[in-house]
Image (cartoon, rainbow, N blue to C red; front, side, top):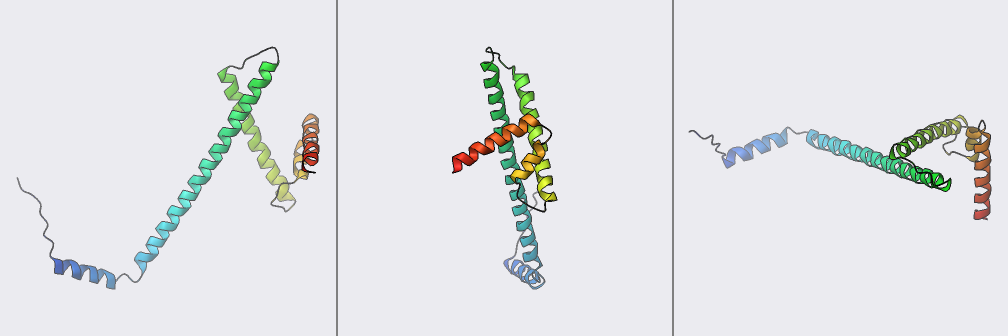
Length: 145
């Protein structure tokens, strides 16, 4: 059997590193900065995705719990796990539509903040929803005074 052996001579190693340093012209530092910046951006995007998933999970769990409670209050009806899952997904889909519409309404007003007007505009075609929103807002105003 033969073994590959590489012999490193210290003088050669020193000469190679000096030669590489002479021809670097700061490009290695720029590449390193770009890599660190790209990694930081990837980490930030990953954190945002994790945060979004956490919010989605919380909305899903809360909506399923609420549906189960409502069902039990009416003659002790239980929700099957499949129905609970579908209801949770529907709530998420509606929430995403709501968020998209509210952002569009605020953008149309040239604002970056979603206001009460935007929520009322969203609910204008759903009379019961508008009444619930107005009632909740009235209670919120009373609670903050």
